[in-house]
Amino acid sequence: MRISELSATTGVSIPVLKLYIRQGLLSRGVATASTQATYDQGHVDRVRLIEALRSVQDMPLAKIHDVLAVIDEPPADILTATGRAVAALPPYVNEVAGGLDATRQVVEGIGLGFLPDFPATTQLAAALEALDAAGLPADVETIRRYAAPLWQATRAELAPMSTMEAADAVAYAVLGTALYEPVILALRRLFHHALLTHDGEFAPDSGAGQAPDQ
Amino acid sequence: MRISELSATTGVSIPVLKLYIRQGLLSRGVATASTQATYDQGHVDRVRLIEALRSVQDMPLAKIHDVLAVIDEPPADILTATGRAVAALPPYVNEVAGGLDATRQVVEGIGLGFLPDFPATTQLAAALEALDAAGLPADVETIRRYAAPLWQATRAELAPMSTMEAADAVAYAVLGTALYEPVILALRRLFHHALLTHDGEFAPDSGAGQAPDQ
Image 1 (tube, rainbow over the protein chains, first blue to last red):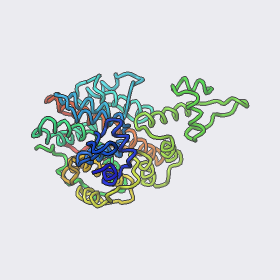
Image 2 (image 1 turned 30 degrees about the horizontal axis):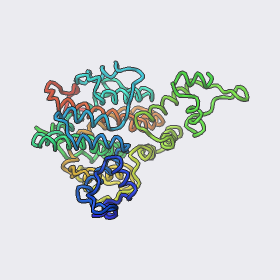
Image 3 (image 1 turned 180 degrees about the vertical axis):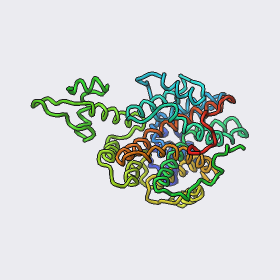
Image 4 (image 1 turned 90 degrees about the vertical axis):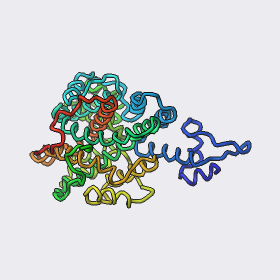
């Protein structure tokens, strides 16, 4: 298809498609004449993926480039892959004014190993500082209420990786990290609403309280 | 204190403080001379709160203004308050290309009532569309793995509200919605890392699987 059709199919304007190509997010079409190129379903899928990352995570194009690079050329080590992907996701925290002592206490308090160089550690530190600045509790006891439930959910979401090829597992881990986050936040907001309306009828229909693999 | 001290105490530059005042996020200091004003601890706290919302949620000032307005003049109804706060939080979704049918199916599938006009419903719809665009599962079964764990966590976090004054409860709900989100995302990323390193030793130290109020 021509670029006009790629634009019509994806709903993304031609100037933006050309921007994606210039920035290396989207590969050039196959040249069919000096001023024409042809695009295929792979381009359509790629544009949809870029739009997905833009729409729900509001990521800058340079960060989307980082995420796509991990998927396009998966590092042999999946930990390297997810580490790079996590660093590309918001919030973008460069430094934490108060250091990492409080974060170490929380992380170790919920039973995790402390990883000062893993991007999520700095992200957690910034989040704890923000709670503190707003006068909301950020102690181990408070954070613990999220730990056990989230541990259940993360185990369930990583389970399918055990049967995947390495490259598929990288793509799943990287895109899953980015794209299930807005689901989690939206569900939490809906649950708040249900709780505040005292909707006593509601109880999630999934064997609440059981670990998914039991 | 003078604006220079407010700046030194909070680490926010004087031009940015003046911007916050012009945009109505921060109240003017009490005028002590034609070109001087004095600021107090309330201003310090407010600047720290604004910075907290900016740092971890990367919210535009106009949206921070919306959140602060809910806290400054709490609506009588806490549902109105949280609805306005949720609408001020990212992701900012205006429309959903594919409509809300799939979202209704998921929401009802996990046992919740469907609220087409609540902002989190549109946010969930955008999140589900993004998953679909990326080729990741977005069906009821997949979303269900988050529902029961998150329901536990949200019950635990709203529990303290039952003993609060109305205005405090609004501030807690509004700021808590915004500021525990990055904690949840950072914990999930840390758990992924722990799972991928096969850290079999880890199990969150909080009575996993039990509802918090049992």
